[in-house]
Length: 164
DNA sequence: GCCAACGTTGGC
DNA sequence: GCCAACGTTGGC
Image 1: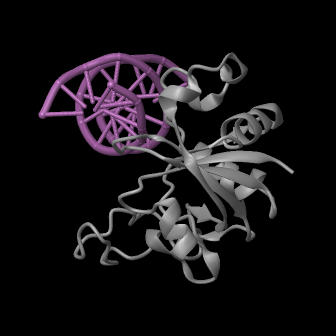
Image 2: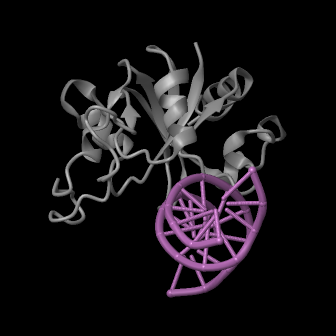
């Protein structure tokens, strides 16, 4: 059992979207970074828990918890140049011309809604010495999927999510 | 919109 | 395999 943090831009996919998804789960599409992909494809296990993090928005921070609920499979958005998106129905920003169905580059897993929390802002996370070594807080960190240690997970869920 | 930091690409 | 140029991320 491992813990993770997964970033999403809430304008595209928010914790509320996950909660409202049919059956409460959907594929974590759009990862186009090898390190993040490897975490998702190779290191995650069904049943692992992850913080759902809202990035590139007015108030970046942890918004809830989700659970890894599938084995890895190819991200369908890499294959079609014309797949529509919310932002621009004519262009698929996730298309990868170098990827083929025989040899897909980008893999994903399904995530299932577990809980929504109060939003725990990034600026708050930085205040706690218990979280000083969080990968999320490391200088220049840009990974969209990263591991969270068991002690960091426990601190955030018990000390920060516990009290509303 | 700015820009620091990082990842990727591609020429050599 | 090096590394400069370029593109992207993401907080502010």
